[in-house]
Image (cartoon, rainbow, N blue to C red; front, top):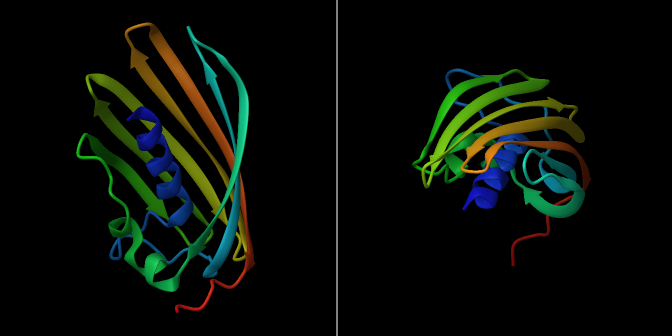
Length: 147
């Protein structure tokens, strides 16, 4: 559940975070995006950096939906969202199965590429663990035509 929440929050930061009335439209182009994310975990159970890559189609309709396209877990409360054309900042607090997590992140939008970071402080039964995620993404082409 924790990993799923982390990935949702990363997607949250990568896709727009926008509340239509409170934010500008991010400088992002629809299309196929390739993402590379490096994650580190520090604390009682530190892990070596892990890098993952994936691709996904980001449509204009998804960009226009903003945060409504995501299924933010009910255990999470968005504390801060500031979206400008070229950047976004956010903070989210979650209580997942009694484990409290505080996420903060920043993303830079550059039209056909973006970069940013997110960190999470988790108060686990073993002690405080800090997860850091750095990511880059690049538009690599158009989404496939609907069949």
